[in-house]
Length: 206
Image 1 (cartoon, helix red, strand yellow):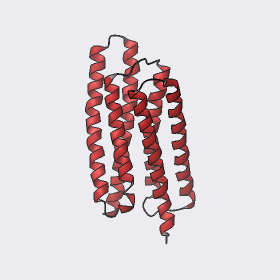
Image 2 (cartoon, rainbow, N blue to C red):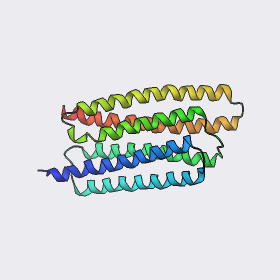
Image 3 (cartoon, rainbow, N blue to C red):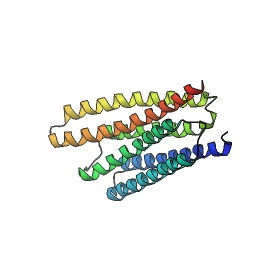
Image 4 (tube, one colour):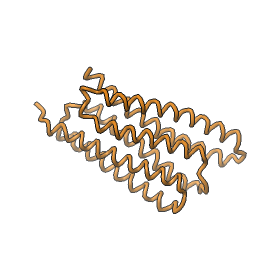
């Protein structure tokens, strides 16, 4: 029989991971909205991405020594991977700002960044209710909201691409920003995937 405390370690570790993801999202949003001291902010994003990776490894190491009553091992592994994808996408976008020598952030990128942080905030709030997975009303509310935000993000992403191809004449700029928009969309999609995975776990308890 699994002791309560042993199961709770994963609730703690996952909450800590989501807090790091939230800080990363807020840092990314600041980079986009206050595009100055860019190189230092990009370096800061890399530090945060590394911290998230270390937290993910901590969870994986705990899986080797402790079983959790809440998640099957494969579900927990997939959940960690998707959470990691949120951060990896944002860190790569920040890195590309430097590599592509981006001088100014486009309005559509700011809109997408706002969508990302909305989704991350919902996930963070959702993870505070993970212990209630057998009575999941609060969890389901956050899952529905993440899905709504992702749908809104899809519309903004498509509009961003349409604006890019209709307004931009420089093919190099088109290539740069198409890549940036795609990576931001990847992070938004990863948020939805995390929410959907939690919903799948809820269904196992239904």
